[in-house]
Amino acid sequence: MTDLAPLRRALLSVSDKSGLIDLAKGLAGHGVELLSTGGSAQELRDAGLEVRDVADVTGFPEMMDGRVKTLHPAVHGGLLALRDNADHVAAMEAHGIGPIDLLVVNLYPFEETVAKGADYETCIENIDIGGPAMIRAAAKNHSFVTTVVDVEDYDDLLAELDANNGQTSLAFRQKFAQTAYARTAAYDTAVSTWMAGAIGQDTPRRRSFAGTFKQTMRYGENSHQSAAFYTDGTGRSGVATATQHQGKELSYNNINDTDAAFELVAEFDPAEGPAVAIIKHANPCGVSRGASLLEAYQNAFDCDRTSAFGGIVALNQPLDEDTAKAIVEIFTEVVIAPGASDAAKAVFATKKNLRLLTTEGLPDVTTPITTYRQVAGGMLVQDKDTGYVGMDDLKVVTKIAPTDAQMADLLFAWKVAKHVKSNAIVYVKDRATVGVGAGQMSRVDSALIAAKKAERMADVMDLPEPLTKGSAVASDAFFPFADGLMEAAAAGATCVIQPGGSMRDDEVIAAADEAGIAMVFTSMRHFRH
Image (cartoon, rainbow, N blue to C red):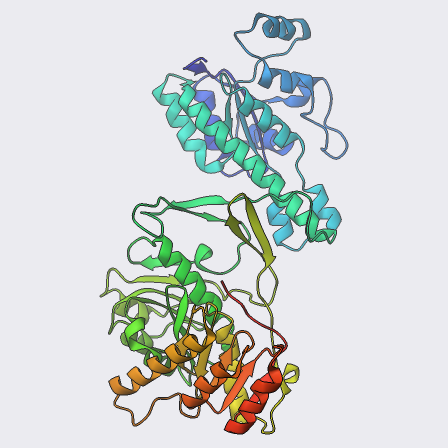
């Protein structure tokens, strides 16, 4: 392979015109002949640059509303010809094909078109054909041809030419060829994923995945693991689209936990009042609503003050000064909210390592999105759990029915249980968690752990009794036996929400009746592994 390859002729055909003029001027300064198409060519001419239309090179005008303009041997031969192959050179001379040493293409904005909710035909028309074909051809011939597909790489290209007297190195061309293939792969992924949804194909024969690099992690879950962060291009509000105002770079675990916290707090409509979630190791250690953000934070913190240390705090409303002052009283890793006041930012500025993230909104927890989990030799694909249960969906199965206040706490507990690793038990009182048991192999153990945490907090806060007394309790899946229910009753729970569906439902219901507990079934479970 050739190391330094001269750059004499370039084809520029871009949808995004950002930086185009400066790039073209830089190329012209190195004596590069410019070829271009349509709007790109016109913009270059308007800037006073000398440019040749691709139609002049091919001998064919652009046709079919621009669908056909670069799909021609004069273009692809110029990109694909091996300059050191005598047969290729002879073919070029015989057919009047000139070499193209640089291809600069960015594709029709298909992803943006889909994101705007365009109709089927409009999306189809925004599928680029000539662009990907040229990109793949140029990238294949990276021994001689340089391929640039991202606006942010223009400056690097010009710097390379300056450093090498108008030439590019093999390493540079290889790197950009890899980027080019990744771009066409991601583009095809976007198209195939959109089309599968548009035609109702839930399980297409082939499925592809793509992401755009955002940052390198210092390490993964542990210091011996390498890691990186990629965005999926959906623009969904959350940690991937958040603005970081201060603090150290987010770690792998920070991002994972912050996502869990924000997805949980988004379950609570900000129009119905403030809510706060505190997360540790992807599990909630406190969730609450309140008359103010400060009250919601304090109640969430009081659920498990020990676990809250070094945790992630998520808010469903913009952070205010009073809440900021309360948060900085203990070590907190990350705070994420839809916004933050200047006064709140000033409070956080005194804690330089505390990360503050703000977004333009909350995650949409009602619209299904696809989630992926890798296993050895394959990938598990499913819809995100957007299951919702309202008052009308509940079935009272005990002799005693919950009061309105109990029903509100039951529904609150159910929303939280959806975000707790299974087996999950969540105690709630007055719209605040008072005990959370997560990730146990036995549902009984989850009930016991949650109750023990409540007992410890009662000692810490010098309360006469644990806050689980008189609480509502949620179980993410059915009670297979009555023992888990009885542990909850022993902790002081007076009402229960669970899916139902066990072979021993009758025994569990009878036990609830005997204990004087109200119980409702949801007919929906929320396993979270």
